[in-house]
Length: 141
Image 1 (spheres, rainbow, N blue to C red):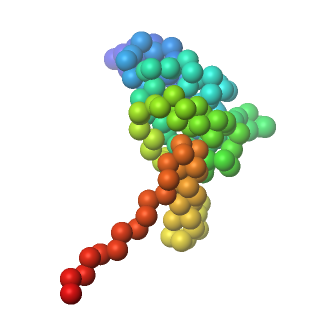
Image 2 (image 1 turned 135 degrees about the vertical axis):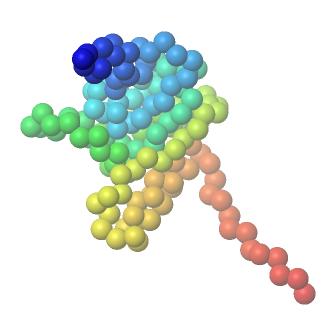
């Protein structure tokens, strides 16, 4: 019986989507970090094919050569996340940005929520999106 992993190895995506022959691509900052590819350069290379951003950060390959797909809170790693988002906003990019932050080590539900709030705040500031105002419920009479 054939080993399926080796048969399809040439068609499996890698960490760098810029070489794929496709109409749409996703930029994941943690994956870019693992590949050693500069995220800003990657966003530019993807140009009009960039449709989705997985908002997170990464600190690259560790000193001991280990590879970790970290999905850190944006700004907590080595990727130029803010610069990429600002450039996309300046281009009036209309794709989607999805928070993909690893909260497993948060320690508590409150800490997990803080990480997600920080991610949202980072995205709003970098994309120049004003914060949403809370609406008060209309109470008749």
